[in-house]
Length: 287
Image 1 (cartoon, rainbow, N blue to C red):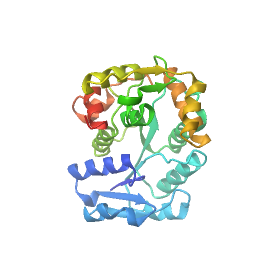
Image 2 (tube, rainbow, N blue to C red):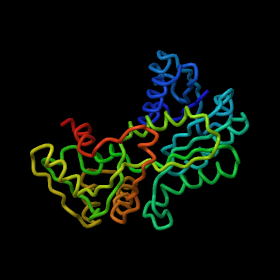
Image 3 (spheres, rainbow, N blue to C red):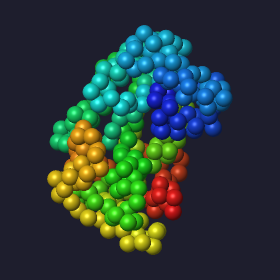
Image 4 (cartoon, one colour):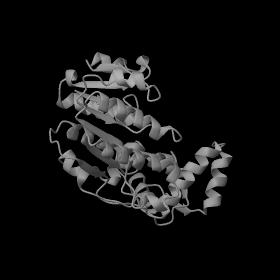
């Protein structure tokens, strides 16, 4: 049986949706904190296990009779590694055969502007490796879905205003990553694997502005800001300071090509070409 954590989040839902297309619901379990958010899973026949990353005893019970667990990284930037450790420890005590983990694709973590947020990914990888359990790491690049967050929901009127210069990202659509992960979870191979889950081409936000112009018929400009200008814009929107720092660190890493990574791993797991940027943008912006 496969257990998926983070099942009520976007990636978790995408994985479970694809698993249901490829195997019976009796082979799938989900971990959730709030049973009220699992109605659709129950209707589909998926077993719901209630557990909390901060409650080791609940995890020990939830991971009973599970063969492999997909640990979708948590969202708590302060306690994330400890939470992941709790899941891994509960998995090991239950004799789980494989731990799969959704990590991050980066060129050089040691020079990242986003080390505080990203370090827990690599701490988790190291902890899983040290446990000597079979593992799979899905090092996901930035989701194409985050283009909406960075470029804004209406760049056709505002343009794209970011301090990312010519930095590029191998964006991948979240639903395709979910589908690829589901395909891999159903493979019975026991060897350890690390995948770079990226698009087949990388793009700058200037490229994205040009593509949006083509497909919308509107002129979408990319305006290269200074980092301080970007922060001032976020402040005007009353974004909390901690999020301003996080967004700024992401844009700094993009500028420095930390996520300028492309790989064929996603397409191999999908069994087809991944989505073109133009089609992804049409989907994201309902064009």
